[in-house]
Amino acid sequence: MKPTPFRLVWLLAGGLSLSSPVLAQVTPPVAVPDTTRKYANPGGIPAPVKAPWYKGKLVKAVAIPAVLITYGAITAQGNAGINRDARTFVQKQFRPVSTGFDNTLIITPYFELAAVALAGVESRDDRLNTLLIIGKGELIMLASTFAVKYLTQEPRPNGQDNLSFPSGHAAQAFLAASIVHTEFRDKSQWYGVGAYTIATSVAALRMINNKHWQSDVVAGAGFGILSAHLAYLSHRNRWGRKPRLLEGTTFTPTVYPGGAGFALTWRPAH
Image (cartoon, rainbow, N blue to C red):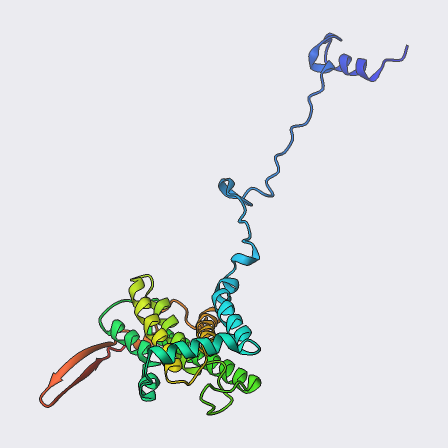
């Protein structure tokens, strides 16, 4: 009888029993753990959930301005009754004032911005970035408001011209107020309250002086706020960094014989 391979192994093994568990049991190979994704999610941190579109920065930036601009557009043409009623009410309650006052008041929020910064209150951005945002916001505001003015050709209530919608004065004032609010809202909301109060006063004066309809100033406020929001959203130049050119720069009030002013101190950065 020809020995089987198993028996040959037994013979070579030197007489081990056929029932020996050493030869009868086959040990399975040990599985090698998969380490290819060992560091894919350390600590079991759940993957970030993408916020829905309606919670995005762009939606938040345009939501309130869109409401103001839409209201102004709807009431500007074909619904003159609302504008005329508001005009009649304002003319009964207030007397016209010098237009030079509202021409100056539109940039007053910027004076507030400078005064608060000079007082030592830390703003959101450094001075260079703030100036860049102001410049960008002004360009957006001027381009958008004057483009709409020439497209709509809305007559002013006093009949001066057909550039009534939207109010450029209101847009300018609310742009400046929005920048003040954004720069100092982390320190105190009252800075923004003061700036928006000034902007609202400008809008009211434009109606009191019979320069604009109610729809014009409401839409103008929307264009101003929107311009500020877009300027911040699109700004990426040296974001969050203090420019070396202005490092060590301070402004201090100075009184000297015969007048007063500000002293500029600049220390070159190392």
